[in-house]
Amino acid sequence: HLSPFLKLTYILKEDWSLKLKGSRTYTPPSLNQIYAQKEPLSSEKIDQFTFGLEKYTPSSLYGADFFYTRYRETIGWEDETRLYKMEADQRDLFGTEWFFQKKVNPFLKLKGFLNITRGINAKGETHDIQGISRSHLGLTTDLKTQKWFWVNNMKTFRHYKTATKTQNFSLIDTSLGHKLNNRTTLLFKINNLFNEDYTLKEGYQTKGRHYFLKASMLF
Image 1 (tube, rainbow, N blue to C red):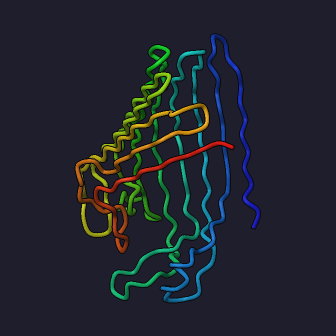
Image 2 (cartoon, rainbow, N blue to C red):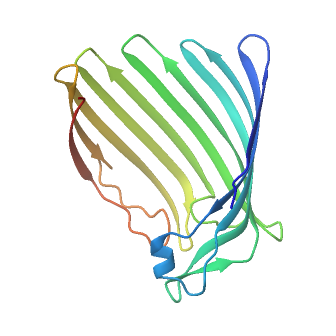
């Protein structure tokens, strides 16, 4: 399948711009889904439309997006059989995301966003789509010096709905890096710093606190 994508941008005065995006995405089933399929699976078909307003300056970016997505053909998880199958019911979602990026000084950058998304079924009723009906707040701090850098990423979820429950939880990732020289960098990272217990989608396990140690070298 071809996945068409169209983006239009109109430049306004004083660094403001309007953006309009539309796409149709075809996503084939994963190997895990094929292995655990109840019936033959085909590609998911999803239409997405976004209208956005942004203001850009050399030290900052502010904006808001309003989006609408229609799930025409999707792969779903069946709790009774614990197998995957195609879902015929059309599902829509709509929402908004407000975001910013700010360079506070030569060493510190801030990024943040607020995402509010709701799902609706073919009958026009608001319902629980796994991982879609939610409020989502994120904040990232990025501190860099000549030799060291420290990045913190926080995401807070409210009313995150799966097939069996509604959750409120926060995830914090932190990483500390050191540049030994122009070619070698060491990185230590902790994901899910406070070992939060949460579920993103029924049938999938999520990770607790886990650690990474990475060394990279340019040749």
